[in-house]
Length: 245
Image (tube, rainbow, N blue to C red; front, top):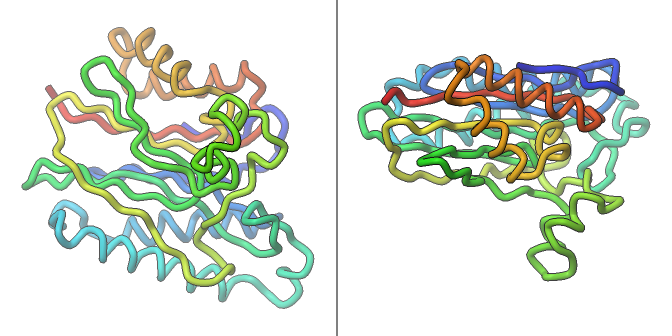
């Protein structure tokens, strides 16, 4: 589910449902440029037959996709755009996108989780929500240094500034990790339009309220709706994938 939110007129988020992969990209860079950047990221992933990819090969293949997306974004940005368009990456001009998602390596029963920027991946397992990614953002660095708390980060005036993205800012590095999966695992990939409006506890509460009675589709819409009722200040995108019991 993706929604422009209650304030913005344009949706620069994109998502990929390409089992056994799910991913979300949040573009930035002004009119049409952010849209193209996010689309380039998900398109590069969509071209790969992920069912045949092993855990050992996933990281290098994901990084190759990111490099391809960056090449496209850089070539798309025309003369003058970099001087006039400011993005969230260290408040510098440019164009780019975040990316976050998970790959289920079918033959090995492993999750490979990947991200760059502040889009996130969560795991719902055994009635508990676990955040699998760590934001590449200014406020996350301040949290890591002990200067602010998680609660303070939600209202920090520079909470939207990210420190890493796929785009025209130089080399981009994707964080990739792998761990064993379990039957019943639910993976949630989302843009910051969800995580900025709902903290982890609130996301877990929605899953508890809805999961037993609704399909994944219903859960995605429920998360979107709660984010909108909390303000909907940004584009909201939620993508879900679950292993059958």
